[in-house]
Length: 139
Image (cartoon, rainbow, N blue to C red; front, side, top):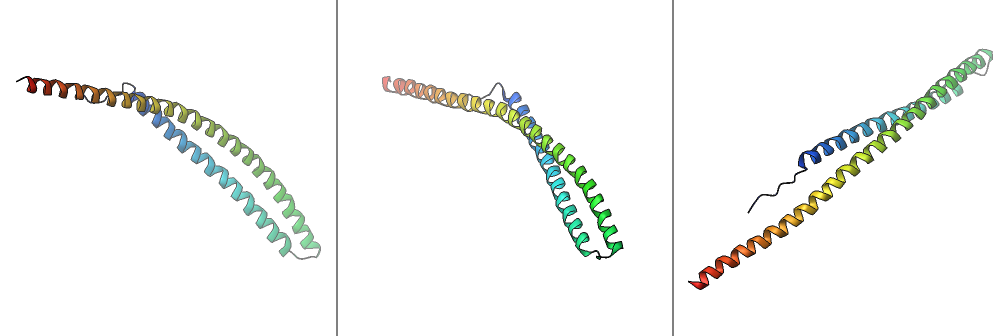
């Protein structure tokens, strides 16, 4: 019996590698997005704790005002980074989905061809067995 050979096997392996590469890139982008979100949470917690820990005198009010100014500036920067990170995640997600669909199409084609090959090989084997049985019966 002949061995099954998928003529597009090299293309399928390249597509699988590309899919894996896109998956790693997506994971990296999601990691960066989560990092920015965590930085925003940490900045908010630090601002809140420093704001409420300062004294209520004139010096404390000045410290609070400086903290709020710095926190607003930092928050604006982090929001911009968050927006960029979300956009990068969406782009990476679209690239991954496109690569995955191309790979899935070839995998389906390989599965169909393998099923067809299996049934054809079985028919050929049954035919050969019938020929052998017929020759033995005629002797």
